[in-house]
Amino acid sequence: MRKDIFILVALLLSGNVYSQKTSCSKDYSVNFAIQAGISTGFMSSGTIDGMKYDGIYGLKMDFPFQKKWSIGAEINYTQLRTENKHDIQTLIIPSLAEHPYKLIFKDQALIKINLHALSVPFYVKYKFNAQRTAVFLGGYFSVNIKRKISLPTTIIGGTTSWEPEGETQNPSLTFLPDMPEADKWDAGLTLGIEQQIVKQLFIMLRVSGSCKDILKQADFYPKKLFPFQANLTLSYNLLKLGKR
Image 1 (cartoon, rainbow, N blue to C red):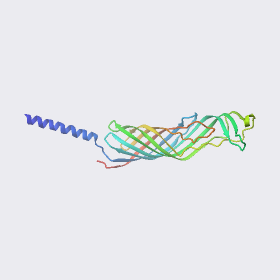
Image 2 (image 1 turned 90 degrees about the vertical axis):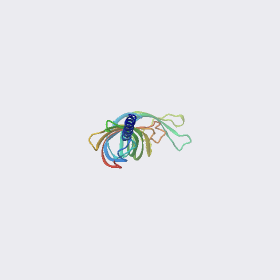
Image 3 (image 1 turned 30 degrees about the horizontal axis):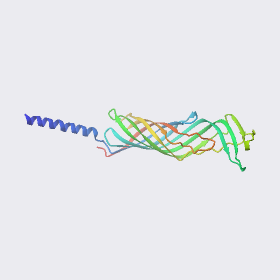
Image 4 (image 1 turned 135 degrees about the vertical axis):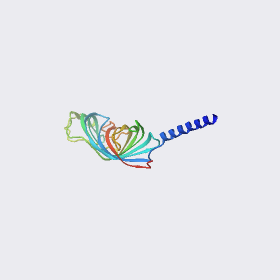
């Protein structure tokens, strides 16, 4: 009787250990997928006047360390185009005089921003619903390849006045200030959800927010710009290495 009980307990324990090992084991070492979709975004500063939609293309990788947990990484080419109305209030203009001339410029201008970037998101992913659904949280780093910021020649309206050495005049505004440049790199947080459609095809919604001011500051523009972006992509699994 004791022998039978011992055998039964041993079988139960071995079954429990096997089930835990199976639930924690990973099915592959790394998965590669290609992805493409649409992207849009805006800048945190100013009034949003226009949001554009552009393509996003890249490679996605998945490195599982348990059956439900994995590390995800991507390499994407993306574009961000926004139009924002900004208040510009003071512009300091240096001159050859001993005291610089100051142009008091109170106005609202439409600033257009166009960024082309190589972005590298990385995150921790948790899979559920028989591994058909996943949520993830992490960060990203991007290099801005093209950085165009422009101020159209049409000023929306405002007041100007010269103040050379305390005297006030009202000349016509015949020039525009040089726009500051966007920085060469950006970094921030990213989160999202992924859903399997068919065996090898997945759809992903991701939202990213910058933790870094991408604008190189200028005297006339003291505000900071933090990009926010949303991506909707389809991915197709190409190759799984170390598959069991």
